[in-house]
Length: 295
Image (cartoon, rainbow, N blue to C red; front, top):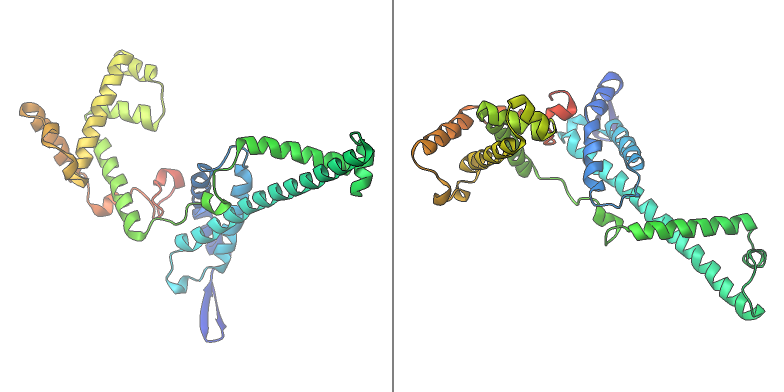
């Protein structure tokens, strides 16, 4: 870490191992923002191009970051990465406009020559009139054909700016989201053993239902029933702690079933506190299983 004096401002910059660690730790942020953006883009947009632009922006953000300002690096880098992704999308828009402009020039000249010659001009005549070579004319035609295919796939309505999420969640929103994820983690762990195996196997490990059924010694139909039962328990358990108004009187069972559910809800509540629930995610709201390390 180095400290420099610029005017009357003391600037702190990271370097060496600190800089590398900062970049490495926030690599998942690039993937997260690219995935978030790709969800609103057509299939022909290259994920690799967006990732490359995001990585470059992350490295630039790390070099320009000044820890002494008290701004979280995640927020600082997010702005720059989003800007880089937006610039990459603008580049795609620019290429599309350029292709359309050249196509209009070729079409206008072709119509002009057709009127003058009384027939469709040859490629040689068209190229000479445009002042380009045959190869260049063919390249323009190839670009036009490619643009037509991309147009069929189509960008979402609006400009490139509309495709990038406008803002990150505010600090309060992010804390609430992280707390919900923590509660969900507690609720899954609090499920009865068999229901927990079904939820973890089906949703987290993405195992086939037939495989889970074989492991539990039941039919696939029974696994489906267990899954539905687990989801109802999870929903009621989370709503009880996070959105009590969503738990209506008709949803509350009576008798021994009610006692079992109350015990389950208590188990969720006693499974942790705010600190332990927030510890399930990093400050971007991403589970640590994705980053591979705690922050």
